[in-house]
Image 1 (cartoon, rainbow, N blue to C red):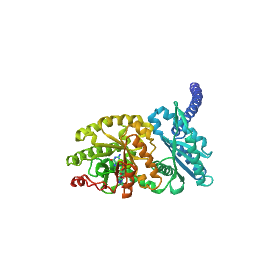
Image 2 (tube, rainbow, N blue to C red; image 1 turned 60 degrees about the vertical axis):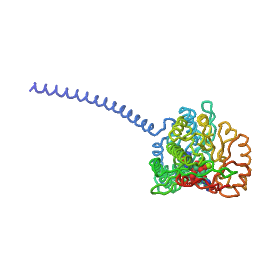
Image 3 (spheres, rainbow, N blue to C red; image 1 turned 45 degrees about the vertical axis):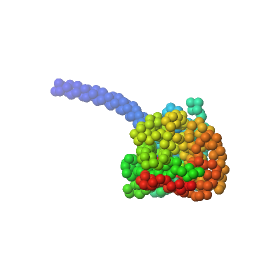
Length: 477
Ligand code: C2E
Ligand code: MG
Ligand code: MG
């Protein structure tokens, strides 16, 4: 009995000691747990912050913005928000001309400038690249808020920056939409504002535009056309039409301008204004332009073989001209087709004078001139090229834009006269396009234009029609 009692007592003491140890273990464990929990929650918070923050600017990123908006809607369900989608103009040139580091500095500086003018109830986020979203709570009149904010943002972006010793001036294109109008979610509203910005970019930049339902439709069409264009290049759907350019004095045929045409199997004929711009925006212009160039050179060889002594004028995009390989590519086209370089004129628009690529362009033009190819500046007068730059680039001629020809009785006449005066002094060939009437032809001839082109002299036509005609009748004479 005594033995049993003693045994029980030992057991009790051991149990109590164990329990005590357990308790202190549990206490220790719970302390460790608390530290762990604190660490985990701190980590989670940090991760959430990181996941919601744009690393470069320190602003919210798109997840941060959505989260911010969600919390606001929960707190104030009836609140309205205007979403501004901001896309910087000319930012790509900064990246191309300077460096990506310079580009980063520009983005950070611009972000600060925009943030400094944002209303107190607004939130600025970086959407990606050079795009920002500014969400503003509406407290009064929406239109007044839009005017005030877009003006302030434009002015803030307009402030010149000095990055790595270079003075830079950017602009901003702004699209906006209002949540919860149009029965859309917040994410749909940001997308709607983005569509409005795309429309601003497409139609000239630097403005503010409200979302309109038709933008979505036009974007869908662009997307479909853009995909179809890749397949069309090199197929029968694309072809080249040729429009005569004649001597203003005698009416003799001088050259044919190659103009690309696209007959879409379902959508019908797509206007060049639409698909060329689309090709420019998506960089498909290089493949398209190279295809036209080769086709046009081969066709010119055909008509020259038939005794039609006309040159061929081909429109070349700045995007083709700024490629290092362009001159080499042209040499191989000329050798494949057998066209003499002297029978080729290249038409480029005034955008070749943009500062961003002037060096590369003058280098390529020098090569082309050395080959014997002629360079004409197309749509002259619509851009910003100074005539002295023409001399610097060593071009052979200019093509006065048809908008001036259409308005010969007004201001345009003075512009044409002074353009001719200077172009003459530089020894440039002067061509006028868009000639539709006898009066226009006669006046241009009197003013001293060398060559003319337009519906009066002939519409663009297929190669078959040119080859079918014996010789070109001198309609302009
Ligand atoms: P552009 O090079 O200035 O071509 C002249 C445009 O004016 C052509 O329009 C032509 O059809 C039109 N036109 C000619 N005569 C008259 C006239 O008397 N009155 C009027 N109202 N218009 C006339 P199109 O063919 O629609 O081409 C539009 C633009 O598309 C061209 O302007 C050119 O910049 C571009 N383009 C066409 N084909 C090519 C190409 O193969 N490559 C590139 N890069 N651009 C091209
Ligand atoms: Mg042209
Ligand atoms: Mg033109």
